[in-house]
Structures are given as structure tokens and as C-alpha cells.
Length: 208
Length: 240
Image 1 (cartoon, rainbow over the protein chains, first blue to last red):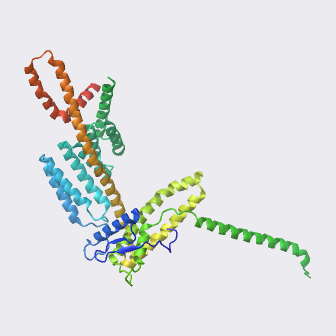
Image 2 (tube, chains in turn blue, brown; image 1 turned 180 degrees about the vertical axis):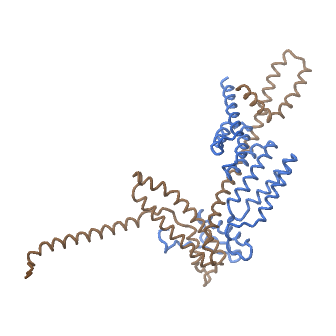
């Protein structure tokens, strides 16, 4: 962008039927290819707007329908969880997650984070009850990714899953980082102590 | 009365003339050189692909065999402008984060003056670019200019979050495989240990008791996941 008056012309081709844009010259560079894909998918999603709108409306207020559905799915999951049907609970959480993650891209990301962190965290716990440690660890990590602070449970769940898989060094690092974000969280401190104990134990065993 | 001695003044006047002339030429040459330098500075950002696509779509050329340029529907143009706004958001964020670092590095003399110049030019260009996008948006849909960057901001933030989550989920498959392998490894090792123990105890024992102990590994094996925490609690107890 050296000059505001000029631009580099890119020969493009538009499909008369689907209106999909593609590069007129093949092979196109990878960046151009990726960008055109993004453009076409954005174009398709713009067609999904409610009729009066032709462009995305302001991010707030949000259409409450989807939030209500996601909330319902989470509640169903929680109910199954309480009845100790962990597999079913995880399925409900998965459905909720799909719904939350397929929100239109221009809807508030903060809202997506809120919904997604709770669902991932709950699914992590369901997986923990099922003994699916790798899944639980990944879900808890995703939950933390969506919400770093005030999410001590997710920090704890990944730490616990890593310990169960015997990845002690990783668990130690993770929990220590969690403590940085969460301050003095009792659960996390205890887990850290446990990990330290185990590492000590392992060391003694190795030396012996 | 005031008879001016023109001849006497000639020298001072010539002196002044030479002085002013030197100043003018110097400043002209200096400025020209500086402008040339700053025009030749490498741009801060690479080419703006989204902007190029948007403008290329506006200036579509007729394809071979047909006279008229293909008609690009408005919705495609709008999508392309939104993509352009998203890229602008990325650039604004880059500029904001770089500004602090850049100015403090400049104050310390860690970076040259030209880097700062490049930065300032990028900042100015960015402002123009934003204004341009807002104007284009308003031209396409009334009042869209006020909203387009809000939407673009959310799109950029959502994309970042989704990319991270996809990354984590992609890692899960590997993790699962690794865990399966490890679990079988642990199991086989456990069995070996048990067998070794059995062999050691077999010497002085009858076969009947061996049959009894053969059930044991199965029992312990199902216990492995929960066996670890109990080990830990023992350790904790020992620490107190």
C-alpha cells in the first residue's frame, strides 16, 4: 500500500452462477487462494442475514434465540451429568459447542467466549469421569483459551488430567501458570503440591 | 541631503545576495533529497491483498470472448469491503502495539530514524485507509460506515479464538493416540513386573496358589487409573 490512489490489479474471475470469485490465472499464490476462500465464505454467510439487513447489523444487541438454545443444551447436559450419565452429558455439551462456534462471525466474540468456556469446562469434567484424559485435557485447555481469568476450574481440570496421564512436568508448568492467573486458588495449590510430591517420588525411584 | 553612496553599498548587498541564494539552494536540495528518501523507504506493511481484491472487483475487465465486463453483484462487493475492513483491524492492532515499543526504542537510540519515519508514514496511511473504507461503506449502504469496523473487529476476534480452538482440537487426536500407546505400554510393563514377582515366589509355592494369584493382575489392571491418586495421598501423608 504505497499509494492511496493506486492499487495492484488482480485478475479475477466470477462464476456467473454461484457468484464465487476465483483467480483468473492459475496457479494463484497461496495467500490469494486463502483470501478468496475467506471472501466467498463470508459472502455466503452474508446471505444468511435476516431480510431487511444486507450487511451485518451492529454486534449488540444479539438475537437471543441462539443463546437460549445453547443455554438449554447446557442445562440438559448438566442434568445428565448429575444423573451420572457422563457420556450423554458430553454429547449435549458437544451439541452446544457446535451451536456456539457456528455463530455468525460478526456476533460479539466476548459472548462466544463466555458460552464456549463454560461448555468446554463442563465437557472436560464429563470426560474426566469417563477416564478420557486426553479429551479432558484438551477441553480444559480450550476453556482456558476462551477465558483465562476467573476460570480456575478449567485450569485445575487440565492439570489433573495431565497428572493422570503421567505428564508431570507439563502439569507442573500448567498449574503454576494457572496460579499466576487465578491467584491463591486452594484447589490449584493442592494440585501443585501433589505434582511436586509425585515428581519427587519419581526422582527417588529413578535414582534407586 | 541623503545622497546614497550606491557604490559603497554594493559589497554588502552582494554579500546578502550570496547568503540568501546559498540558503535557498541548500534548503531546496535538502528537502528534495529528504522527500526522495522517505518516498523510497520500505513500506511498513506488505501489499494490502484485501484492498487490491476489492478494487479489482470494482474494475473488473471483460473476459476473452465477451465485450462487457462481468457484472459483480453488490453482495460480493460488500463482502470484499468487509474483508478489507478486517485486514485493517489487524493492521491497526499491529500499529498500536508497535507504537509504544517503537518510540521507546527510538528514544534510547536503539533504532534508526528511518524506522520511525516508516512507522509514522504507515500510521498516516492507515488513517487515510480507514477514512476511505468508511466512505466506501457509506456509499454502498447508508450508515454502514458507522458499523463496519465494529463488525470487522468482532470477525477478527472470533477468527483468532476459533483458530486457537481448532489448533487445540487438532492436537487432541495425537494426544489420544499417544495415550493409547502409553496405556498399553504401562499395562504390559505391569504384567511383566507381576510375572517376575510370581516367578520369584513360585519356587516355594504350590501350583494352586499360583492359580489364585493369576486372578490378581486382572484385578490390579482395572485399577490402574485410580491407583495413582492413592499413591499420591500416601506421599502427601508422608510429607506432613
